[in-house]
Image (cartoon, rainbow, N blue to C red; front, side, top):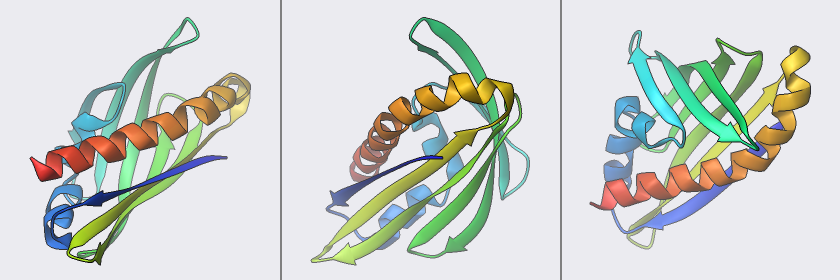
Length: 144
């Protein structure tokens, strides 16, 4: 399973970070390779991504299910592949320190089945970059 984590210091209150990350529709559009998403209910949504990796164009559809919300410090989610055999999860945490908030985004993903042999090496390369870019984008939007 590939895992990646990235932390940023944001000069805002923990509550302001929570107000953004607790609403999936605010940050879904910031995920690299994002195409679209559809909310099924307050905890579940379906996301579509399209991207290229080493000349391979791939469309991936996943389900994101919120499994834990501890206001104002943590939101945790599960990832289940709809188009591919993908499983994983992630979380955003927000911890106040010295008047700022330290936000950490963590994501882990693995692909199984026949496509796993192709997808897992790509996931291991891309996941750290995607996690860093997403966390940084969220931080910029919160500060805006």
